[in-house]
Length: 247
Image (cartoon, rainbow, N blue to C red; front, side):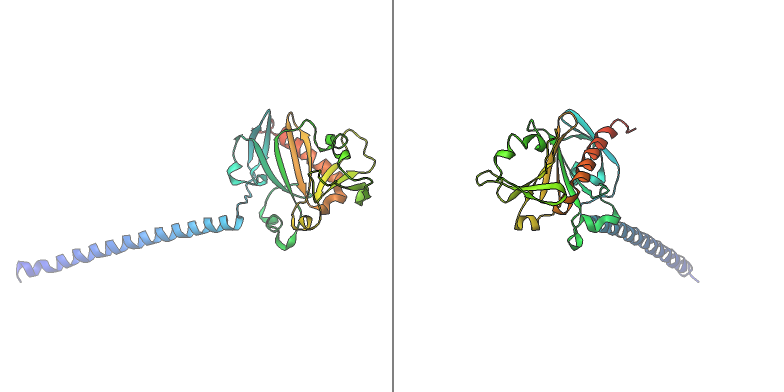
């Protein structure tokens, strides 16, 4: 046997070994790519399912004017607003009656599946008026609604706005015999606009040092206006009080 013949099997073995190594690394690369695709697909799938919502309850400290609020991420509507820092306005959404934010278990309610209406839309910003809706009732609204009003559910009276008042297709709902310092008053859309809106009624109240909180709610909650008002004021105090309790 020649030296060349003797060395042939050795060369073949080296070449075969090198090929197996390349095949092995090829499988490793494919496995890693497959894992990345799988993880990416799961993350994308979760993002699509959430549709902009989040079930993250991490509280964020948000300064608006002279006030600081602590609000869980799952109550904040816009993804870009879910961080600590200063803001001119904060938009939230809460599920009645618990007034909690988005969770996996309440996905249908937040996505309005089946025509469900139980979401309150809340906006918090610096006050632009010296009086909230209750304070504007006597000096302003009383002069631009038609008298007398019509009795409604749960001790409310409905007043139509006069033409040229600037509140076309709206109705003013006021607690009957309201003579307290903070009488309940809310404006609600009427007609087709009301049926097409998820939250056709709105009320604004002053909270904190210099904030105005506007909450919009389904007309179906008007009979529960007492509980609604108390719950919203308590929730505002919770946001404002929690800032000092956060570690």
